[in-house]
Amino acid sequence: MKTAKSITAMLIAVLAAGGLAACSGGSSGGVFNQAFNVSGHWAGTISDETGAARAATMTLSDGGGTVSGTISITGHTCISGGNLTGTAVQAPANTTGDNPLTADQENSNDGTVSLTISSAQATGGVSAVTISAGGAGYTSVPVVSFSEPPSGGTKAEGNAVLGTGDTAGEVGGVVITNPGSGYVLAPSVFFSGGGGSGAIADATIDTATVSDSVTFTLTGSSSSLIGSYSGVWKSNTGTCSVETSGTVNLSRL
Image 1 (cartoon, one colour):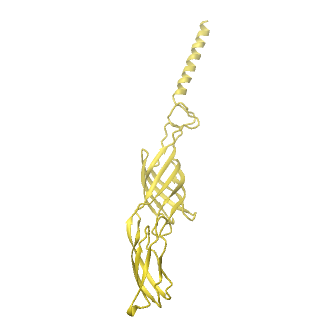
Image 2: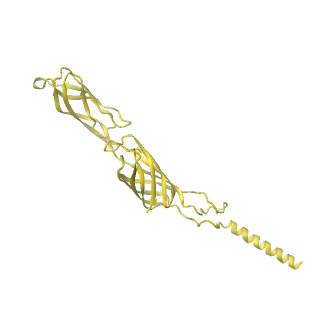
Image 3: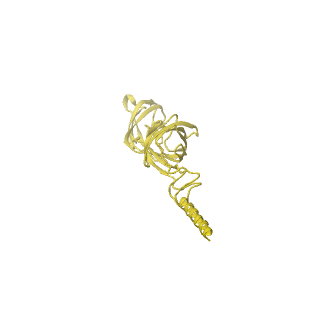
């Protein structure tokens, strides 16, 4: 009887020890309490409007999930670089081999990052039109037209004025009837009709500051991130005046 009681006591002790180990959060396949932190230097590619992969680098500082930094992109049709702000969030779930009763996040250095780059791009309406060549042979007032502004803007409008005396038959000026809005670059000015030809004019825009932005949404680990970006960015080159989007692939250096 004493032997049976001793064996029973030993079994109870072994089972109790096993239960405590199971509740302790130990894992045969995990690393305890890893962190998802994106601080450091990153390099990779970002696709542009043409689908081409452009070389990109990011330098990030992650202070407990609040992220700031810079980005530089070579050869992108719209964005060359700027300052980044955003957040990083660690994946909350335990992974294979972890005790599901604990929240120690073993094996979890994965997460998501949301970063935004903003511009202070100057846009505005047409404030003046300067005649650089009046042309010749105009017997009636030609129609004036302006090139289209980027998406979201309104097209400028105006009326031509013919010269008199020594400048008769030439375009002497343009009266702006609607300055339009949203121009990043000064629009082209066109003259049609009126029986003449050769009139040339240059527009000037009265700029105001607007803020366009592009957001990068990335997922991965503390060593590699992939994802996409989208937003509106009015480039100085005029080649990226509407929504831009693409893919991102980065690795920590």
